[in-house]
Length: 242
Image (cartoon, rainbow, N blue to C red; front, side, top):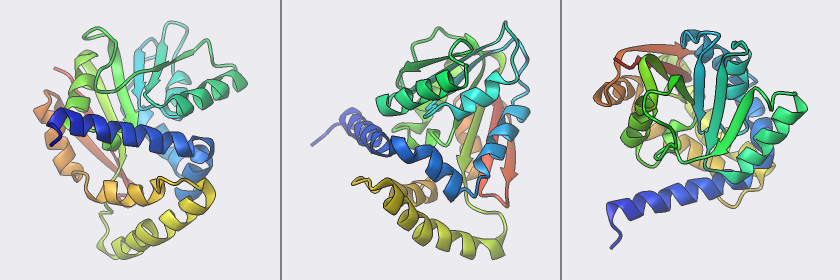
């Protein structure tokens, strides 16, 4: 029988391979499946982070770097953005995107596991994640690592899918989320890992917005704010490190 640690490692490796298999179509699918709303959600997450122009920002589970890019647009020459991810295929695309946009000198990309971030305590003013914390094999450990590397007074920002707040909208949303989204995702991605069937199940099994707030508080964060967007399809949580 596998130990708890071995089970978490196995889950993490499966997630890494799954996202590696869809890396080439990840941005396209995000745009199609979110009806292009994902860009506005990231902009809002950066806004409510209250990031200052000279801040040091870490974007974990950065994927192809979209949230890191959004943060970089708010920083001056003294500011710094680092995007980390444990998926090599995603990081390859992130670096390609940065070169294309002449952002390679403004954003550093590195390979790192969110459960073992290679940074000193209290280093960043903002640590953030968009649509990634749900995939971390140990949620509390992931949030705790983000809190650890965040300076006192800094913010931990989590943008994640959530369950709609509007009861009438829920039925439409769940039909799309459970039936249409996996179908489109499978056709476009051609992934044998069924990544877009995994997405609905992972969201439905993830803590709700109030449950995630409690998790963040249990990891030492205070004054956790909740911002539901687009009828609750996504929620941004912003916690302060005391």
